[in-house]
Length: 305
Image (tube, helix red, strand yellow):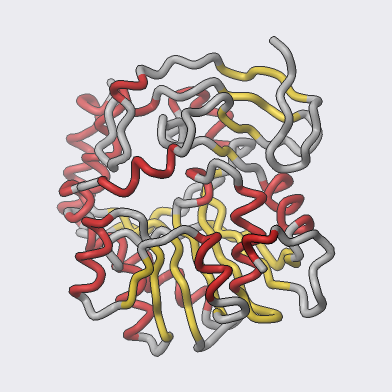
């Protein structure tokens, strides 16, 4: 099949990795895992920067998030808050306070923890349902796109976070430029995503949990750093994201695997011994970068001026 241009480095040295196996009518944007949810659009691999991405895609796929209602997501609030506490303990040495924007903030669990620790926390979320829940917590939420926010609030934020969000972007290079625009000079960007070149991805192949129809970008450490350089960001460090696992979350996450029925007795025993286990899996990238103090060397679109 004819090569496709990489959305990160623009190289045409690409090839098909996986053919499309998704049924578009069954594409889900919730967190209820199933064997169907792991089916994806056609996946292409870049041999230059190692990035993997889905192409072609339906136009304006982001609009699907506006109507998402995900009751299952609410069941894992405890896990997300415990993970937020652990993540913020990693962030604090780099930025102890200031204006924080969580992109794709969902129901605001991370923002609530950040606010309690003294950050001035705001969110961006497309889902009307999720935004409403976050506002009920007394947290300001912009139900808008990054492009619009970057135009309104240049250099507003000391910290921007993205938890399991960057893999959903149709045009990650554009979105990263808008993030740069929103950050103050030397502002901190922290994100979490899976490493498609990591141990777990290599071990599990198409059974790796990041293979989902709603995920359209699959980063490696190399491609993230490449994107940072193009976007006027300086890479700081990559750590492992601390997942606070509780029984209900593991039960849901394993529902996409046939072997679940054979290991649940052991999982139940583990959580009888202890109600929360912090899991640090290789390839769960907690990636940090700073905005360069000088003016970035890329052209800014008129929409972002």
